[in-house]
Amino acid sequence: MEKQILEILKEFQTDMKDLQTNMKEVQTGIKELQTDMKLVKTDIKELQTDMKLIKTDIKELQTDLKVVKKNIKELQTDMKVLQTDMVEVKTDTREIKETVNKIGTSQTKDVVGRLNVTKKKTDFEVDYINNRLTEMDKRLFNIEKRIEN
Image (cartoon, rainbow, N blue to C red; front, side, top):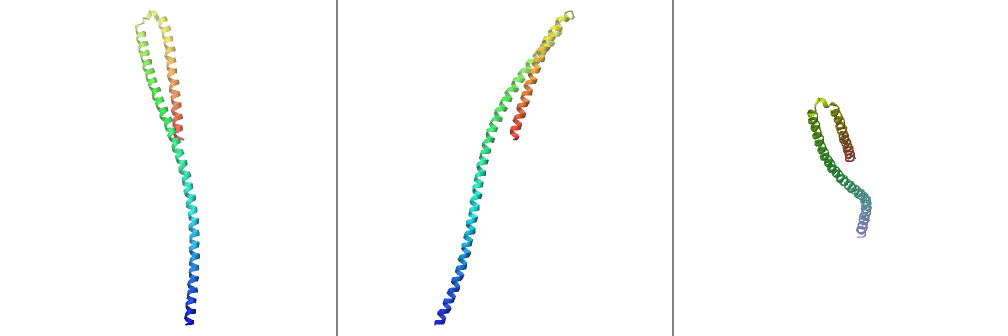
């Protein structure tokens, strides 16, 4: 019976050693899991930071879009003004043509004087419209650049 007890004790000791080995493996696994969890936490923090940056970028884009919309409305208004100005210039041109047709050949000096005044006025209006178009081109270019950036 003593042999049986000794054998049982040996088996028990072997089982204990196996349990201890298994416990060490479990502890190692737990440590690895803890390390992995720390990495996951770090990744989550990085993702949260990235999300905050994305939210900030989206807010900036929304602000930029509002500015672009405002600028587009201003451009549309300016285009309407230009169209009105062009109608005025066309009307003035028609009036000039009618006036020239009515003036007789005997009044050449008066015609030349009137034409010079009208030319100056028309040149001024053309310069004005060209300047307005140039300004609008610049504004449109700036808006396009902002959108691209």
